[in-house]
Image (cartoon, rainbow, N blue to C red; front, side, top):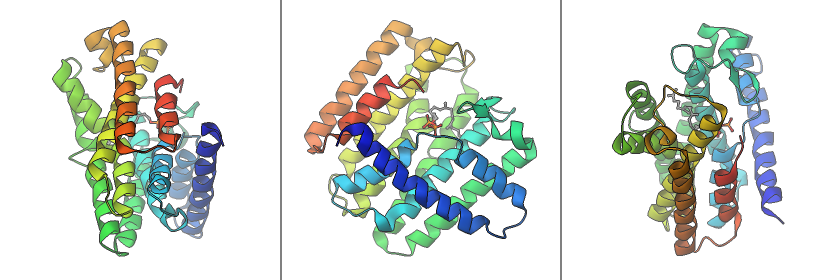
Length: 279
Ligand code: GRG
C-alpha cells in the first residue's frame, strides 16, 4: 500500500472514533451550542497529522490501535482548542480557518473561548480516565499535558505574542514550544505505551519534524503574504535560506529515522508530506 493510502487508513479510523465519541458525549448535553461549536471546529477539515503520528507510532512499535483511540481524540481536541483560541481577535485575529469561517466568526467570541475551554477540559477528562489504565498510560497523559501547557505550546504562544522581532534564539524557542512539542508528544506517547524502547529517539525525531512543520508554515505564510507581524524564519533568514533550512531539516529527519530503524517507510512519507505541503 502506498503512503497516501496508509495515511488515509489511519485518518479514517481516527475520524470514525472521533465522531462516535462526539455523538455520545453531546447526547443530551447542555447547552447544545457549546457542543455545536466544539463539533464545528473539530470537524472543519483538519489534516489530523498529530493523531495519525500517534497511531503510526503505535503500529511502528508493534501495538494494536483499537484500544488506544481515546488518546488520539484527546490529542486532536487539544490541537483544535489551540487553533480556536489562536484565531481570536485578541490573538491572531483570523476570520478563516481551514477554508471556513473561524469559530468566533460562526459562534461569536465568547462562545469560541468556551469551545476552546471545552475541548481542552474534555481532553483532560479523557486523559485522566486513560491514566487509570496503568503506569504507561499515566506517563503518556503526562507527556501530552506537559507538551500542551505552560512548559510547551502555551509558553510558545505567549512568547509569540512577546516577540515580533528577534533572532535565532527566539525563533528556536517558538519552534520548539509553539509547534514542536505537540508534534513530538504523540510519537513519544506511542513509544512509551509500547514499552519505551527508543523513546528519546522518537522524541528527537518528533522535535525535528516539528521544526520542519513550522518552517514550512513560515514559508507558506510568506508565500501568501501573511503574518508580517510575527517572528518567522523568513524574517530572520530570508526566503532562500529558509527554504534551504527546511531541506536540511528534512534531511535530519530522514537520518534520524534510519538510525532508529523505523523502516516501514511511512515516516519517510510523513517527512516528504510536511516538507512539500501546500496547506
Ligand atoms: C492559543 C495556546 C494557544 C496556542 C496556539 C497552534 C498555535 C498555538 C498557533 C497556531 C499558529 C500556527 C499557524 C502555528 C504553526 C503550526 C500549526 C500548529 C499549524 C496548524 O496545524 P495544522 O496544519 O492544522 O496541523 P490542521 O488544520 O490541519 O489541523
